[in-house]
Each structure stands twice: as structure tokens, then as C-alpha cells.
Length: 102
Image (cartoon, rainbow, N blue to C red; front, side):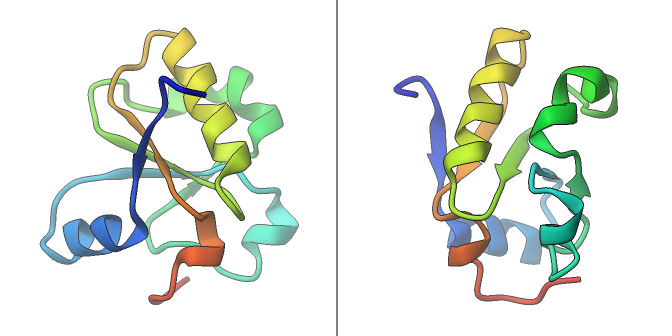
């Protein structure tokens, strides 16, 4: 996991607030996402990632999110091995997200 670039949740929030375009992928299971996700985030459970790669734009900066940051780090490694270069892992996952959810 040493290659994974991490981003602080506050940075994600501030960038969204400023209107920067971020592709946020939530790799939690649907039951976890039901309790709330970052507004605009797309839910692609970690186990479905290989089959749903076409739903992620490789040219856009992508922030991966899970509950605590572990599964999203694995997702980052997978995407990087698939050729994605603009991928970041949100540190602490949704446990660290203190702003609005949808």
C-alpha cells in the first residue's frame, strides 16, 4: 500500500465546496451506504470493482472511500494496477467524514 496516495477528508470537503470536480467512489456494501454517503459519490462495492471499471473515468481525479480507509486503499491499488493514475484514498473513510451525507 506504499504507492497509494492519501487525501484528508477535510481536503475532499473543501475541494467539493469550492466546486472542484472529483469522482468519488464508495466501495462499501449497499447496506453500509444506506446509512449515508458523501453527496454525489457512486457506490461500487469492492467485490464488484473489476466488473464495473467502465463506470470510472480514468481521466478524472478519483477519491476512493470506505468505512475506515482499508478497503478503499485496496481499491486504489487495484485501480492503479489497471492503469488508473489519478486515484487517492480518503484517510479514515466515512468514520472521518463529519459533513453532510446523502
